[in-house]
Length: 137
Image (cartoon, rainbow, N blue to C red):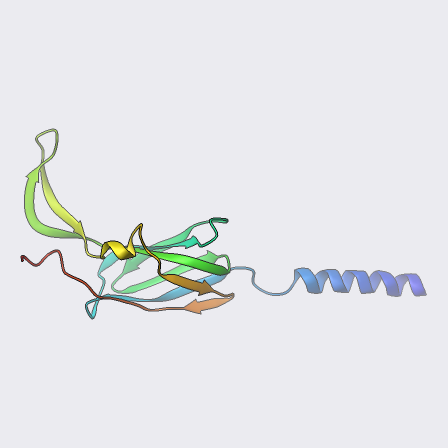
């Protein structure tokens, strides 16, 4: 009867090692700019070590939720394109609306903002402050 006990022990320990709960996380929260909810935009989470998948989602009415994020330290990048109320011409002579990113450059490609993601749920709000490109200087 020792063999079935040994097999049961191996199966149980394998299940416990592999059945340890969620291996990914849902990351959610709010994004504001100068105290106001960001109406539309995107958030991306880049692995700090450069290994693994980049995760992201849209920002709608100040809220975001990203599912299936691998745990670990991430670099947060935010973007929120806004209309400037101006028009111009593109290289082909077409009329185009002037647009800019509401988020300061420090939240884009140059971001150093870190977030540690832990399964099964990580909540983080981002309160961004900066000059509003829609307001004339």
